[in-house]
Length: 221
Image 1: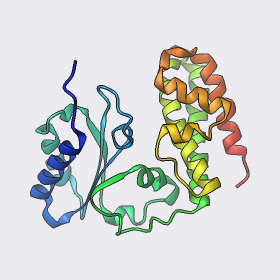
Image 2: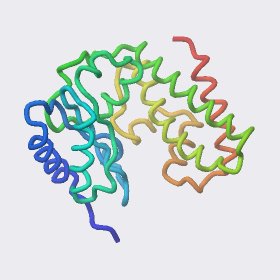
Image 3: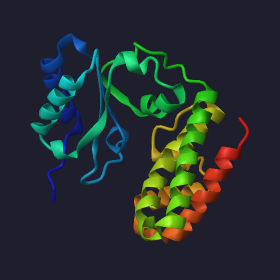
């Protein structure tokens, strides 16, 4: 059994090392994904969000070296950018990242985080279009890898669901449990498949994903 990770201590150590590397240029450190939501399983990725002023290629190399020396650094992944870029990033594309991030150092005060229903709906439709494209491509050209694609797409569907809830209610579900309370029958299946990828036939999931993602794209805003 792998060593259990104290994620708050891990992020605290990361913040300390980042401050040493970047000083006042460090504007935000956050956590997203299953560890931020308290839904992590053994071996779950550690999705860190790091925002550094004036980020450049040398900074990326320094961050790579820093992460390599962190405990459980092999589980680290996530997003690194600069406040200058996030301030002009397409709103629909940055919506889920900001809403899903638990900020542990700094703040998103360098950008407008007042997302609109239209931002969220466009995020949902773009996510749905990517699901539709990925699944239809594998069904036609590479059905042997269908399991891997539907596994990725049910994860993406979770974020589409959350964006749709925000577009309709103005609230972003903080967890999969909260999302499940508002889910349709197909969406329940996707959430169940996320928990147990082997519980459903990949073709069944693919067909459900195709129909559902198409309906999301056709929905009126």
